[in-house]
Image (tube, rainbow, N blue to C red; front, side, top):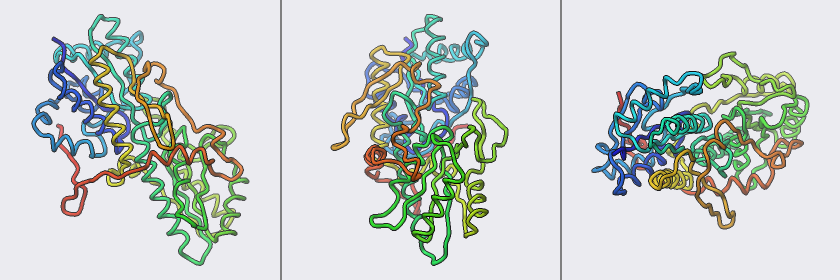
Length: 408
């Protein structure tokens, strides 16, 4: 019987993606209908190369390892950025995937990832269905960008937002220490959407004399208005902190950063230098001390400051994904929707993955205060519950004791 399970992860890491993996494994181990649980190392690319490991052997008799997996950031099964061609263009990868599925008697395939990963789920589901294969293909969401449609917010975003808000709080305090006019520009991930950068609105401590100047890709960058706002903040508080999305564009849709000209395998531009571009503008126009900070990959997988809400929701989505497949569903993505802010409450469900693939959810325009380079109270209400709570991370020799197994 094809009752074995295969799980893989794809795209960029987060602090919560392994919680989803732990949720699937936990639900499968508790099920009487599930067979052996396998992991595909390096996503769909690794499956094509038959880089398959047994997760049953690793976790069935080691509940402590499964608990640690839930709280470990990054990606236990490693990742890839491999784009499957459309089956009618070249079906060789799909044929190879089905060979691997059949060899390991796979009846359920779970792919944890973002926009591009959901496209992969949709294509594999369509191909296996057309071939008459009884394989349940399920998408499990994750991305710090928070740009998947249908779902209220994506696992990984809450923890990244907590890291960004905390870091910006510390930058604000640091920038305001000295009796000289100075500006700090912080570049935050977000090529097409500004959700993560918007979380900087949570940064100022109570009664702090300044707030971040927030620049999102949803709003065309206007150099003159930007300089006026920075000058206003420096004149008022003596300093300013700018939170800028890496995907900041001008009115013509051109990135203000140094576009390297290179594209990744999904056709996305490789960006570099938004903070550098803005610091140059500020230095030229204001002549004050200015520095740029690029948070880079540090904001993706800061497990030491993960949001408990984020971890628990990710785990539940993984567990639910298994239950959907077990009940016969396929070609869906597990999701959650918010049903209340005070108290915060969500309900879980699923959606046809084809509705999610390749679509991008940006920050609503009416949540952006373009004149003041900030976001509205609606955004604040949306963000606050997502960063709540801290997990009890164990430490060893002064450092977080994450679960790391080497997969060759």
